[in-house]
Length: 64
Image 1: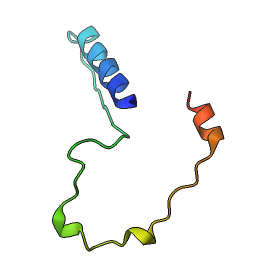
Image 2: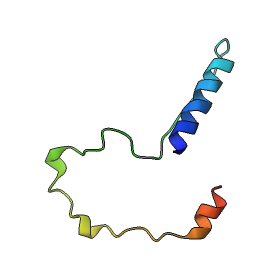
Image 3: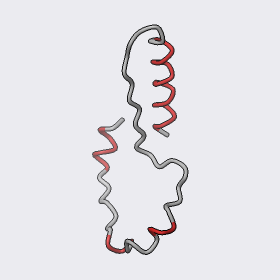
């Protein structure tokens, strides 16, 4: 999971810069808990209206 690596890098940065001034923004792309959406949103959207994205193997190759 990319988020585990991001957290490790953020913690390392915090430790290395704890005596100085800095700004740190950590953003997670992966889903995180809670995985359940609010129940009142259940009927707001029809999943069939949202097509699955097209997977392109070239994108994965570039991200490594």
